[in-house]
Length: 226
Image (cartoon, rainbow, N blue to C red; front, side, top):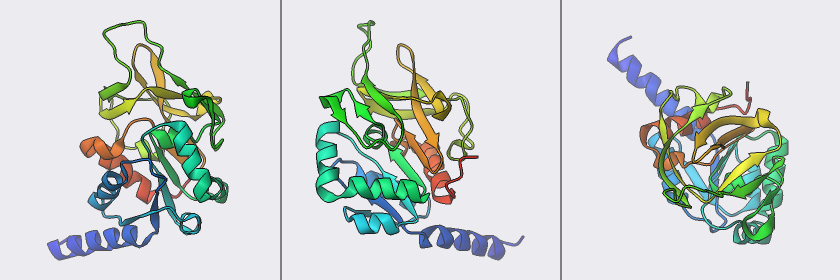
């Protein structure tokens, strides 16, 4: 294939990714611009929105977040985004949760003793560490180990590290939904996937090339977890 053909194929591929309507859910929970920039790096224009109607119309939804479960849930409910997220989940729209977005997708969080969205059965617990050399929150780079394959984890290699900032971690009811684990005085779920929903406790948008690879996998994903 000559250079012109390669260039044309690349442009076509990027245009196809960009034409899909990808939205980033805005509920006053931070790190939205960094997620938007990461999407742009892989050729996808992602719009930041707090409009439930736009979330429902989207072809793909990114649900990031940092902060506390209680205030996040209040903001989601006030804007009607809790119902919109339930609708896109049920409609089969591909959804990517990140950090707090993952945590409040489960049923309950120990943080603020908060009932959360219930997209995925399970709860969220705070680290209870005995090693005084380890701090809470868990902050920094950590290796991730895949335990069940998923399209979004394609090309993630053993020993690849992602960036974490969190004091709480997900405990899904179904162990079969756990896709990857990390270790912080014990193993914990750091990525889960059920149907059209996939989420990470780590921040792919802050994890360099390996994180961008995961985001690129998401913008190509059709929502099938096989």
